[in-house]
Image 1 (tube, rainbow, N blue to C red):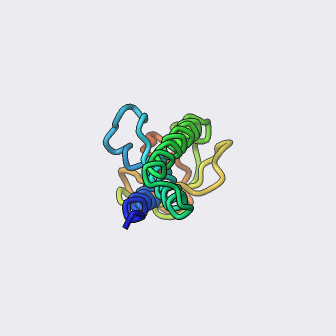
Image 2: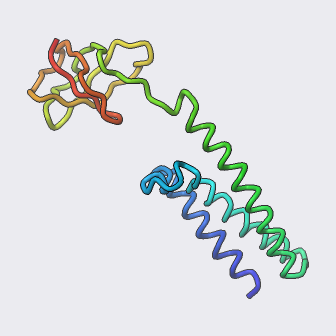
Length: 157
């Protein structure tokens, strides 16, 4: 019975961590604290709290000390994870370079609904999802006029 809170909090933390890793940081959607709160870091902290609580209770430590040690380790894990997440977010790899102005060629038919293009740029090694106001056939030379997330809007050159 004494292990139940640790197991529940650790399980919820694992769920938050998995969701944050698959979908992206869940707190980014709410713009809470300008990135001060990280779902990934909260998930890690909850998992550490649960695991350390179970381990210390199983080792025979008094329940109050198990909670204190689990809470301290969870706070330290949160702080460490938050620092790492923030550094990764601010790294040059975390910010995509704008593709506006790049030229390339359509690799499939591109329409308002979508398509694929290859761009001639220093960091362009894969195909990109693209869309256009008019339908462009495969093999047409194009130029990027807008960059929206992972998609680019193109026009015929």
